[in-house]
Length: 303
Length: 242
Figure 1 (cartoon, rainbow over the protein chains, first blue to last red):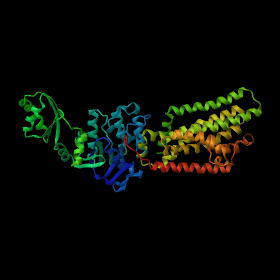
Figure 2 (figure 1 turned 120 degrees about the horizontal axis):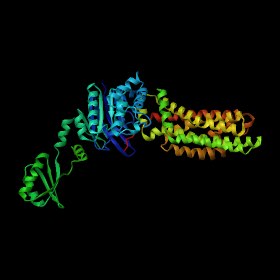
Figure 3 (figure 1 turned 135 degrees about the vertical axis):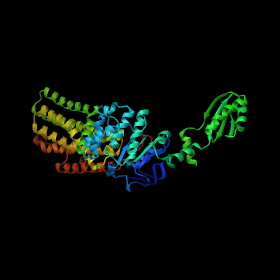
Figure 4 (figure 1 turned 90 degrees about the vertical axis):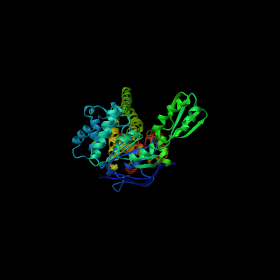
């Protein structure tokens, strides 16, 4: 049972603050680190894997600082986001080299076991240079778990995988978590985190915006006010009708653009068409205005 | 563990076309010696020209050029493309990584330089002692150079450019100008060894004493390795966007 702990951790590069006063703990099971690109996910993962020194605070694996402590890599498997691998090796050679450098007792057996786990046996003797993104990813994962580490840290592991590979990787991570391992992965895709992790950490702009059970955070995200923009043949008449509807919180008509705000996403989408009929307007477009992940995240931060 | 490191480093270096092109550079030296022989020179002429060829082209150009390309790539190419993460994520002492990288770069540099120097020495003048002296001196110099260049690759991401500038400006020009700067010139260290081993034929090629040369050589090599270990222990990895 291994626990990663961050205590009031900050990290800055010159004037740029990448991670700002973050405190959390990651224990056994699968934890998702969710955030938009550039939020500081990689910086956090690199600090936890000992590749980056915290500018302030401490990053600990079972009470030992991870920075400048290479012996800890016996307990950590790290899968970087970067695609670059040793292109001049076959996957089997790459994974075997990892096993040997880890000082595994029986490197060949460990290599075969890891190759089987990521389902790469058919292609294992081909050069990684010719691999697809998804296969590369699996080779990287196999190399990271070849020494059977209690902690596995993965940076955007599902990038570039096709749906089948994605499912397979999710099953693999679930199986490893069921063995009591501590698994932390980062993603900027809500659905991935939702499907896989029991716990989630949301980072936005270097800060921990939310953490805990995914369902609670999901509710926070869906309960927020939603904005839609509407185009129709008669915006003014439609605005009047919409304002009468109970699920509508606010209506704005400015510079020819009709914007509606609601807390109930589903009810509004159902109310728009009848309102248009009553107004005698034909509906041209109904578009959610702020469904990007960034706006979801920034909403969480404001709370 | 060490043998895996050696294999990985060697395969990475040999996989680069650049490394293989360096072998051709050695042929250039041999070709120059062959041209000299074709001119049917007197014994005096062939000695003077061969000595100059070995000192100026072999030790002055071939050795530092090969060492800078191999030395800065031994660890630098992994730092460049980010694959260093696979090495750093292992419970391997950082000094061991540096020592292996320097050793492999040293041996590879020696293999690319020493045969060319020996063969052109033999072709040019036919004196095995002279050729052997320059060859052994070059092998010793290869260690000092590669240690410097491995350390350099951990100090700057433009190690190849900086290294080439150092070879051309410092080793090529500045070090030759003053007595004091000669002491810290790898080229002068190598020539001092060549002179000591080469007997009468090599007399006068060096401008500093052997003892001094060996002492400075040892200190520079140790300092470079020490610096490299210190830097590798503190290498920080950033994300692709950070």
